[in-house]
Image (tube, rainbow, N blue to C red; front, side):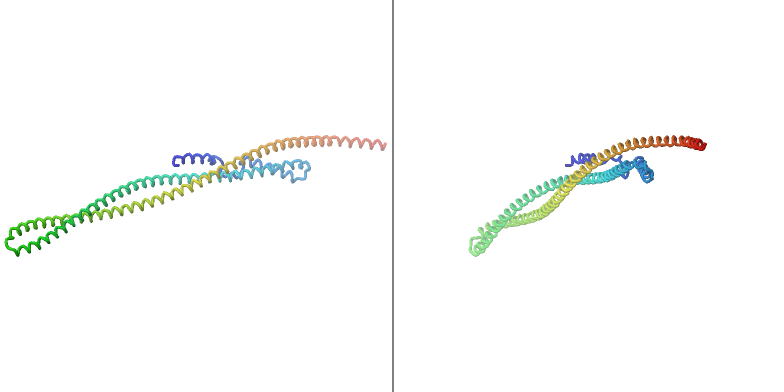
Length: 321
């Protein structure tokens, strides 16, 4: 997933609007707006006048206003779509960064989990070795205790036999030899006591080490559980973010399709407006020609009227004569 993030971001950038396109989109362009507004103003003035000849421009005024409204609505929709595309693009980029960061965090946590797992395994082995050593030392110490107990029992029996032999004559040599044996057994008993004490001390140290190792193991387990919870949360967050990204990508694709459809409608409206302009120019030329003809006819009529008046005057004079 981490390696595919740059491709997702580049794909998002392809869906977003290029930065050099107009961001406000409130008009169709300053020159075009001024031209259209001027034409509409002239057409309205002509329509408001009482000249019957201006009524011929009425259909063109209505068509101009209709096309202008269509183009303005389409341009507003396009501006709204451009803004929506930019917002979605920015949101997708932010979510992609979150996914990338979550992926890096997850990878770091996985490495830490692996290290903690190895440490836990080493602690488990060390604890098992300590338990085995403690078990052997306990068995050895128990055997030494039994041996010491047996020696004490023998010493007790020897003391009882010595006390009994002292009361009998001719037993001095035997007593001396038995006392020598007693001293040796006593030394052996003392040695056993020292060894037992040493084993007990080692056993206590081993127990303390085992307790410390178990505490360390429990701490590692706790850290492992916390890390697993963190990884699960990161996975859930990543999945949720990926779902949001998929949803936003679908939205921006739909918005892009709408923008393309809107651009197509605007293009068709511009073609229709161009056609109406051409028709308007043709009608304007025809109207101009008609006005010129009417003016010429009026000039001709004005030139004929003085002749008629002279003819009428001459006819009236002749009639009087």
